[in-house]
Amino acid sequence: SKKDLMGNQSTEQFDNIQRFYMETSQNMAKLNALKQADKPYQFEYLGVYVMDVTTKSTFKDKLSIADTVTKIDNKRFDSTKALIKYLQTKQLGSRVEVGYEHSGKSRQTSGKMIKLANGKYGIGITLIDHTEIKSNPEIKIDAGNIGGPSAGLMFTLETYQLLSGKNLRGNLKIAGTGTMADDGEVGRIGGIDKKIATAVKNKVDVFFAPDDTITSEMKQADPKIVSNYQEALRAKKKLKTKLKIIPVKTLQDAVDYLEQQIK
Figure 1 (cartoon, rainbow, N blue to C red):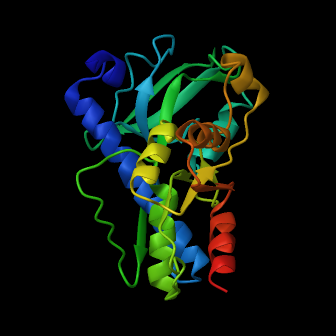
Figure 2 (cartoon, helix red, strand yellow):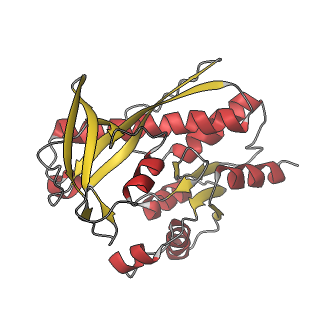
C-alpha cells in the first residue's frame, strides 16, 4: 500500500528522499572509482540531509526532511559516520546544538539525546551524506528515472572500469547490489531476493551480494535477521538456480574477484 511504501511522507518528501539516496549513491561511486583508479578529484562534504525524524525525537518539530545539518555542537564533520560517532559519546538527556540549512537559510536549534530503537543513544534523525565530487574528466551517471542507494557498488565498478580502461567483465554477465560508503565498504540493501530473481530471469552469470556484518543490536531488534549474502543464498536455493553469488564486504573484494576471472 501507499502507507507501507511511504509511511507518513508526502509524495514530494518521498521523491526527495529517493533523489537524495541516488545522489549520494552516485557521489560515493565516483569517489571510490576515482580512488581505485588513482585519479585526482576534489571532494566536498556539505553536511547531511535529514531523511526522517522519529516521533520520539526532541527535534520532531524543529528539523524537516531535506534540511541539511552542517554542525553539531558547533563542530563540523567530514562524514555521517564521524557525526554519528561523536553523538554516541554523549549521555542520555544531554543537550545537542544543531546547525542546519532550511530552504537555503542557515538556522540553529537544540534538543536532547534520546534512547533509540536499537538501544543506542542518538537524536532520532535518519541522515545521509550531502556531498559533491569534482574531477577531470567529469563523471556523469545516467541512471534513468530511478532512486534509492542500492546501485552504489555497480555504479562504482562500471565507473572504475571506464576510468581504468580495464575490461573487468570479460565474457561474464554480471549483476549485483549494495550501497557504497566513502571508505569502500559495501552496505546492506532491501529486497535482495527480488534482485536475485531478476538476475536469474536475465541469465546473469555472477551476482555480487553485500556480506554485511550483523551486530548484536541488529539481532536484538530482529532475531531472524541475516546478512544480504545469506538472504541471496536462500533465494538461490528456492529458485533452484546455478547463479554464482559472490559475497563482498568492500569494493576491493569485487575488483579482486573480477581481476582474477580475466587473468
